[in-house]
Length: 128
Image (tube, rainbow, N blue to C red; front, side):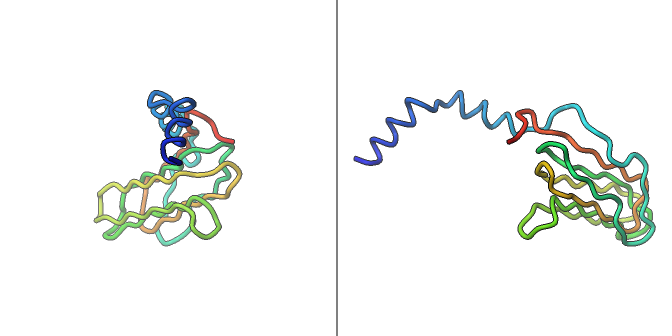
């Protein structure tokens, strides 16, 4: 009975069309903000730290300048925040992207990477 009642309430206030629209709101906006346009990290170190003005995605791209180039993005400075790392051979491109929250410090670190570009895309639907 509770399942039927829940189902009835959801059908009155929440449709599949709304579900698709809500999901679309979390997608990255086409307009981006360049955080770092031409960075490099010949040895392990912080490329940038960034406080996003809105909810969105932080993306870092770079080319390995030596074997085992490494790129890491961290979506905050607390426990259990999104992070992504990538390591490739010399001359290959690295790409990492993490969701970030408005006002939470985000970081990008790298080792043996050149032509580093870090961008921020806000989400289409904004945030809180």
